[in-house]
Amino acid sequence: MEESQPLYGPPNLPESASAHSSERFHSNGNRSRGSSITAGLKKRGHGSRSWIKIDKNGNSKTLELDKATIMRHCSLPARDLRLLDPLFIYPSTILGREKAIVVSLEQIRCIITADEVILMNSLDGSVVKYKSELCKRLQIKKYQAEDLPFEFRALELALELICMSLDAQVYELEMEMYPVLDELTTSVSTLNLERVRRLKGHLLALTQRVQKVRDEIEHLMDDDGDMAEMYLTEKKQRSEAGLSDVCIQTHTSGGTREVSKSAPVSPVESSTSGSQKLQRAFSSIVSLSKHGSLISISDAGENIEQLEMLLEAYFIVSDNTHSKLSTV
Image (cartoon, rainbow, N blue to C red; front, top):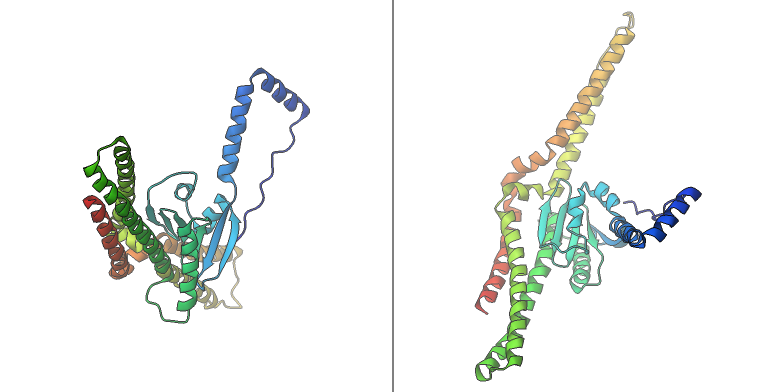
């Protein structure tokens, strides 16, 4: 994976442009300041960020990557990366793409591929725990037989930590709320009412967060196509096997043709034959890439129960947490 290159400032303006810019600044300082702020926001949006790359063996490395590098490496559109941007607040989301799973669950924001996890670096406790626990599990299980593919182990840990975190927050809120309610029944005061109002606001906000996680898991379980799209390891293996078959067929068809030494060879016929071979090979590769995602839906469709069972387990956990909040 390539690291991002340092950002360089724009070249020096010509003297005439500099003079014109200076004159415009003196005539309208507010406009110039607005332009500077806009330029700063653009630079910040396209600049490099700190990411943690974790491979299949549990080895981690911190990298400075920009959006363009990640988009090329993971074949993701810019709108998917906005879900991971800490400058924006988005609800919990899990997206299955052609070569990656985009995960934005509370503070855990990462991109999961068939070979690695690219985790947004943060000092948040959930992020630190996800990184350390994932590395630990991968290092232990690389010597053991594992039923789940790499991408599902990484996704499962994110769901596990977030569900545990939300459940712990509900418990803490309950422990804080019940004494306040008991005190309110004996003494109705402005202070007690204010404490109840504040706790009610926390309750509503926490309920929305838990409900969004639960709804996102349920949405995935209801769509077989989305679940099949998330079988990244299987899609990669099928794609590599298909490309290997195309190369073998192309090589074989090119080497089995025999030409008589006495027969004249037309240069037009030779070039046409070569073009046809290239066209057939190219068509096979294009056809393979077009149907790569459909393979997972048709052939892997029978095996989505593996992911469905994983999601169902954490749907039950999040649903129980949501039920606790409704009874508070």
